Length: 181
Image (cartoon, rainbow, N blue to C red):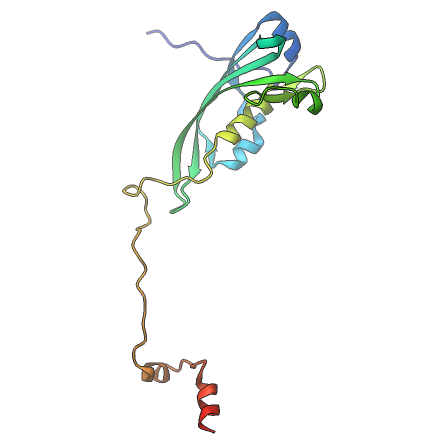
C-alpha cells in the first residue's frame, strides 16, 4: 500500500528577496512549537500547519509572497466552553517591503510583510495570518451546544407579606416609616 509523502518542516527563517528573485515555492509544514501566540489563542492546534509560500514578482515589480495554509484547531464555544473543532484556511498575498514607510506605498488591496533584515520569519508570518483568520466569537450550532438556551424565568413578588415572612428587608421601609411620622 502506498503511503502519502511526508511533508517536511519549513525553515523558520528565509531570505524573502532572494527567494522572489529565484521564483521559489516553499511547501511543507510549519513547526507548531514556533507558533506560541497562535497556540495560546486556541485550546489546541490539532493538525499540522500545512503551508505553501509562493515568492514572486507582481505588478510594477513589487516583491510578493502568496500564502496558502491550513490547519485544524480546537477552540472554546463561547456559550458552553466545550471545545469546537474548527478547520482554518488562509489564502493571501502580501507585499514584501523593507520599512513601514515603504509599506504605505503599497496598493490598498496588498497588505505588507515588513522584513527589515535580510531574513524574515515565515513561521511568525503564517502565525499572524492564522490569528487574523480566527473568528471573533465561536459557538456550537444550537442543537449541539450543551447549554440550553431558554429564557430565564422572571420571579415576581406579588404579596408584600412574602418579603416580611422571608426576612427580606424592603429598601423602601425607611421611607414608609418617615411617611407615617
